[in-house]
Length: 226
Image (cartoon, rainbow, N blue to C red; front, side):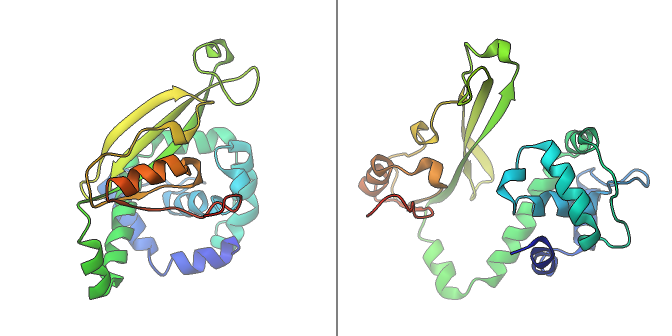
């Protein structure tokens, strides 16, 4: 799916007016007219995730924004953009805005569920989304926060987030080279649904979840056989 196709599909779920309304609610609205307005910024940030290589790299995001903006907003193409402009926009945008967008999409998804799906999901006591992120640090911290790349420093944040209660129930900070699957997020409580990506793929983790009479959803690892 290319950026234009993705934009056409996503914009039917989340309109421009809804994004602006959420921006006003969480203090992320535009204070004055500028090149990088909140609505195109939101869409370009979201759509840039389609290209896996652009995530976490500001200079790649700049390139993506410049090339793609005329497809999303032909009336306001971005002909030039700096990494500093994106960095400032990120730092000045209240994270509650993104949480508000997430909750809006979640409400929309719930409205689409049929009675059988609602009945099935109601069986779970809680639902946890588990994910991690790597943050690069100054190389002088390499002895404390070792990275997967030589002569670099990075820390890793692993988070266990309750979708039912909308709160992080566990946060772990480790060196960047520590593998995600070492994050201990599984409890002995039954009827829990865990959502995670391939970074947490581990038959040991699967056994813990099954033994606790809980459930999980993950993409299938193509290099593993069940």
